Length: 530
Image (cartoon, rainbow, N blue to C red; front, side, top):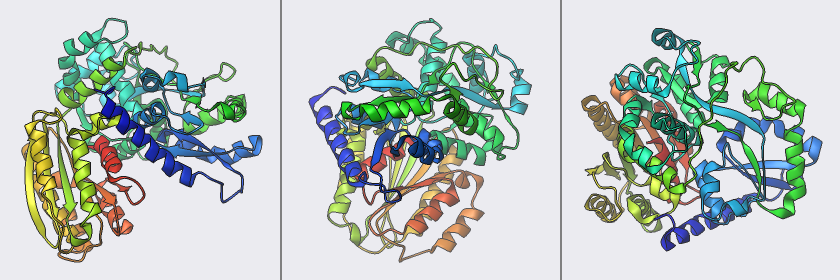
């Protein structure tokens, strides 16, 4: 399906849209006047930004990161992205894509960070895991399936830390010592399901997951993330008790942060960057400031890293195997989700805007055949509630997805409803949010074994019904179930960024800006948080 003609066309269109947007923004640095060298980069690299002025002083290169998700970045590069350089925490998925390997003209790992498990000190002591190098993924799965261990992990279809963890866990549970195969996934799906019964927090990025863990640490026992992120949490002063880092005995997957050359005309720039970042003093600075391990033998890992031999699992050699693993995780293994979509159908949404919403739901129900599009579509076992509003709540429709196959009756019902929407009237944002959170809180109280989220899409400012203060009063006085649900708000049209940021911050969610990008791309990114 990924290699279909329609998939290639949509992938190419996505890459073109991204490339045009970046080209418009990637001209000359306003602050220095030095032409910017733009790198397609994973968001994990944001913590290197404070080093970029020193890099420029040493090399003359004004490096700028254009952030994108790891799988989105792989899709863009495979489809002909125009960036000269790319830098992600891992390129394993990218190298599996047809034709992608030939686009990588050179690559060099810069730093290292294994994906491991951080466990609350008290929990580790209770389970006998503190300082124990013999803990296995099977031990962790046994505690999770018994309801004794609740943890956080990113969505493997959106973030490399979750993707790496899933590969490591699946390989370990298969127990063959070889690269994961399709029969391994089928045979051990129940074991994976037992482990992920304990996953109680998901996210689309490693940084957001860490921030959310801090806010929800009272209800969680641990977090799967990069070693560097977990070490950073331990020294950040935000944890009530430290995390003991667990390196499961069967093996883990290590991110090696390869800097990649995609355009031969920038070979000289690439060589300068590699030489700079692999200098011993720079490696030491990165280790000290970001908690990543050095990639050169001249610099030894310091005392913050445990003195433990790390077992690296073999990475699958087949794209089909990796895609199957992600699909099994999304549709069979992880807890199902219940997503509440709160859609503005006020008069200002008429025309292209409401047509954009309809196109977005067409993609979420199967029209988008790109790699990331397939992973973002509505999943098996997922409940969906669509709430429409203008000057008041207009409609509430519930859907259950039993068959996520494009064209299925379940997906057609969702799309038919959205396609029937017509715009008109005012904008009662907070009335709609109160309605959504009330329903979501009731649903969670009835069925706590799901991921719940609210997505707000509006193109205007509130001009009817409750105001922001009244919504905040409702939220603060609501049940714990209501207050545990995050709102992901989309800034669109003339919507107030401040008001939407306030809603997202209040609920522990985040905002996504669709004013300068395609609405479908934004909705697809949000799916990594649901």
